[in-house]
Length: 504
Image 1: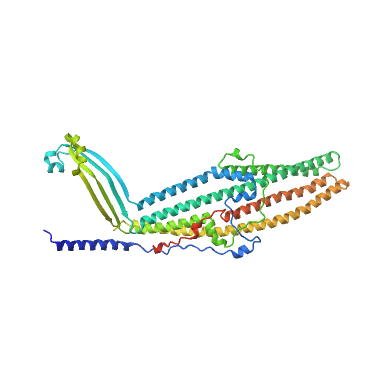
Image 2: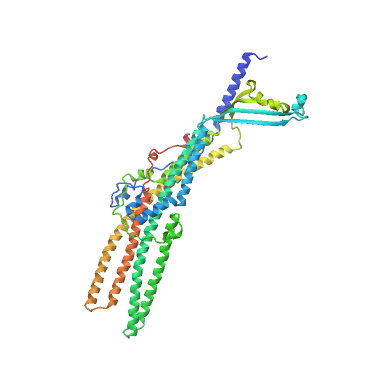
């Protein structure tokens, strides 16, 4: 016989012990090293002050259309549809979004139904037969039908919610990385197209140079046959012609490389780009604009920065998840259903027994699990998550500094190429005057054809160099647009998450 007072005392003692165990288990979390800290964006006022064009606005999403080249537009549109790298990024995003649903299910109770039918022979020498000799060796049927089974883990410590938030952060990072892949793809295509276009124009110039040097070689050979010159001018003219022909072959090879690069970026075979650069006209922007408050704005406009920041935030959430592993886990399972057992010879009566009112069954089982000792596994997992968080923060800091450098470098390149082109055009104007003078002297009989041809060569060489400078300026414009995010915008990142793992 148990007295009520004694039972109450035992219950209180048990609850006290359980409470002590419950809260005592929270003291095992090691402190760890101070976590890494996110850098604040550095200022760029002096760097921007050195650039003549004041910065007013960010690039548009389809920034490549400002160059007014339909061939480039078609190329990029094809790449955005067929590029394998972009498709792979889309697949990673879909995977991350699916994982959000998987982790989100942890916050909800699990409801399911189950049923089973067991056919079993009772051993004649087993424990059950010893206790029930009459059924030894009999065959039985056991039917169980539970239309409702319930499982739920109480998220007292926020583990499941932190896991979901980490998954959301990873999905947001994948979305930003997809935008980064898109930006890098379009920028790479624009750069390759502008380089290929310049090579095509340079090839046309070199073809003219080859024709001029062929004419000079022919003139030298004619003068040698007529006895007007010795063999030395012929040798020089032949060497110049062969050098120009070799240069032409090299340019063709470089042009093929750019065509193949563009075909690969577009997700097509080499034949796709054989007839590119048929529309060489490109509008070079007078100025490239970028906004005030550039350093802060990059957080919103750079997809790689957004991805790195989201991953750092997700890593902070996972540190919290690792800490909650040190706490007790409390869950509840329950079921409602029917079960019945009968001998095999009465199997036809099982359905009547199973669904009778006297066969209904139910049960519930609250559970408590506490991690007393796991050989250092929990401490190791926590240390690994803390290290992952520090790595994610330092990756963000490195990405931020690289972003600022990219902007500064591209602004400088844009400004310098612009100044070099203006100077080069003045040089070409001066050389053009020399050609006109040589033509006048030819008409008046003071010089022969050789002088006109020789004066044309430096002009063509400078045109060749000008095409390279214009390509460099276009590439610098693309670099600056890419450094400014290429039209990406993420307003959510303005509310920058500051989750310090040491405070969780």
